[in-house]
Image (cartoon, rainbow, N blue to C red; front, side, top):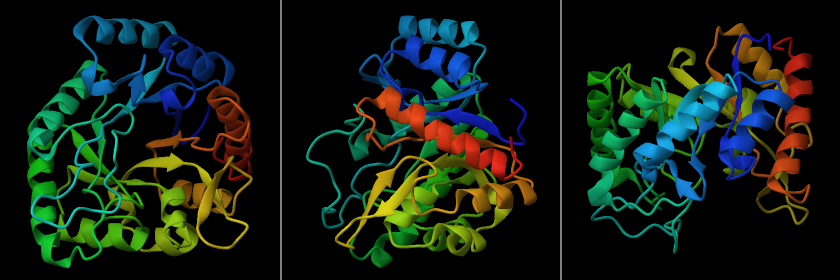
Length: 292
């Protein structure tokens, strides 16, 4: 696949059967890259040595490189702050780690990055607070300290803008990147998530970002709900995000890391078929942007 980007898909958006997910990504979609989040109904961080070995064997068999470890790092409540309304009642993606366990989560994520031969770990900046101002400096300090630990192992942390967390949009991401200038902290730019927080991700949100700090990109589409309040996920190419423009801009700006399909939309019945249809839309948009 000829592209200036590492064209990828998040494995468990296809299926929890890791062998099948890799087969679809590699043989059917024609990809050389995959993003790892969960497999065999386990969060990636909970895989044992035998499962890691098996996963590596499957990757090799399908000739797939790993873009990053999609870790749940810092997807927890900030201590001593009011509990976030986004704080889930149950774990997400089989991740049920506490704030006290976050140093272990970071360590384990870095270990997994090494095991899967990638230099990137995706992370967050805690469940969203109604007023983050009193805590923001301390949160930034925590991000800076985590990036420093990652730097010791030559790993880059990519912060995802996520509507349920304190950095949701391009505007908010630009502020955090300005406050934490560490070269080992980059952005996982997610236009779909920015749209869900009522930002026009491209061109508006993207224009605010320091382009050299974008280290990963998630691809999903969204459409405004019929009643006008909020958004719902759509297959790539069927939503309101100008992905052709976004891909063109990334290419123009010299971005060469992952563009990773994070389907989320489930309109085709099964995760696999939904991802298949979403990939068809994404592929067309990459081609229209001259990036495939």
